Length: 226
Image (cartoon, rainbow, N blue to C red):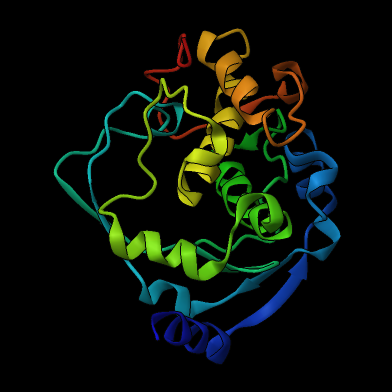
């Protein structure tokens, strides 16, 4: 029933569907490689996504994902930015961009949080396309939201097999590798993430992600993934 309500909310107000841009395809190619059919993916602006807020305790500042944003404390409530159903990513109006991988500014920087958001969501598309391996279905992913206080929370030093993690953690680990490879390619944790992801997808060496990036908080960048 919950999934049916989500479908109704998304499809009743959805508009502006597009394929991935060349820059977005190039962004995910060193991560998922040929295991993700990017031509089948679509991004749809859907104001209804904002109807589903998420609430969680402030996470430990032990991951690249958490350390590139200003510190947060207490109980956090945030609007949902994206929901994936099969090959389609529905994005809230505030989170919608015409290109999540387009460089900007005189030094052509990549907006790293925006790129990480796209990589996370396209990992759900990858989970669906590779469901014989992952067992993924959107209903199971929604089940994590119901059963867990914070299905995105993971141990920065995890050594558990990739597929033993929940679907949101799997997607979080892929975006975490993008973060670490971009900011700390020689970090010890960067290498551990690479080996973990290579259990299921042909991720490239960290050097493949070398480019100028922008992050909203720079105080914790040195050795961010050691």
